[in-house]
Length: 104
Picture 1: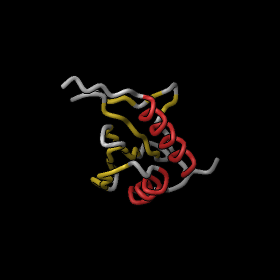
Picture 2: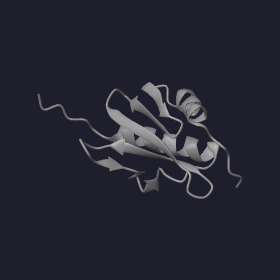
Picture 3: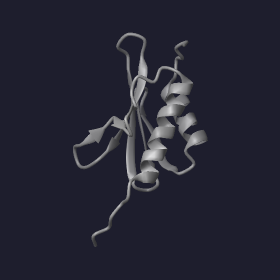
């Protein structure tokens, strides 16, 4: 599979196109972005330039806890548009399946 050179803007375009429930999508730098899904899940994307360069995503679980593997699928090492789309789809499925409990 070929590797794509995806900029933060390219990834944000994919977020826009494939996650209509995403809000507050912002480019934080050329190597980092973030968005909120379903007004409940903070998601960040980061570019690593080790080797070929890939995007990876993580979901906030709490103040300092982030997870980059959900539903048995890694959200990292996304080197192509298809890889990014698959990670975004996994994040969406995860967010839809998690029950949010409001104790207030």
